[in-house]
Amino acid sequence: MTPATTRIVVIGAAGSIGRCCVGALAAGGARLLLVDRAGTDVVALARSSSAAVALEADATTAEGRSAIVAAARALDANALLYAAGMPVFGPLEALDEATLETTLRVNLMGPLLVTRDLLPVLSAHAEAHVIWLGSTLGRIGIPGFSAYSAGKFGLRGAAEALRREWGDGPVRIHHIAPRAVRTGFNAGPVEAYNQATGTASDPPEVVAQAVCAALGDAPGERFIGFPERFAAPLNGWLPSLLDGAFAKHRRALKQIWDARKNNR
Image (cartoon, rainbow, N blue to C red; front, side, top):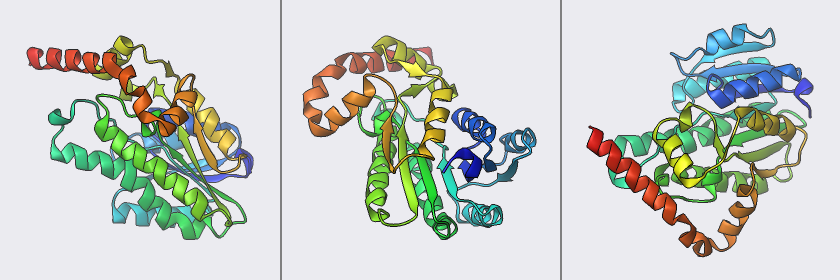
């Protein structure tokens, strides 16, 4: 499959990464159903391309998913990109229950539920693709991102299981895991943390390129960035070996959070 033969549902289309993916897919000739919550500029985004239509819907609700399925069926969609996500940063004791529940709902339950509901539409084709945007933090847990990693580790595990579950069918699942991306997600305290720990970041266009490439690839997972794409499998094999490498991350987290508390 190529972008030119793709009719794709993009969840989280109005976000920074979603918007870049929309631009790259549209440039390649794809037809798109752009989905995001009410209050975003997803409608205006769709107006910028003759190949796109917009839908204001929340993929984490049954009502929103029902609307997405109906619109996807009208498009005769043969691909799904789940690019929505909720950033959460901070020590666990600073995160309230509502924040923990919401981040898991958006980052883990959302892609599982919307993919499940869209399966009848996607599996009607000889070839279809499901692309989930994960994170390097779904393979490497670091201080300050326990809640975010909980969802992203789960997402990576679900993608791995589904890749094997669907191995003899038409629906192919891809898990794309960027490192830090230069978006509003990584502003403020996260930007300070990344600077203090020497964490590299990429522009969202790098992720969009990986999404377009996935349409022509076999199912699998791809980690973006060096040394992350080597550190990720190493951490999977021998996680305790890397535990000592994150002392500076612990110190940076404490310094940033202490400064936040002192400024309140």
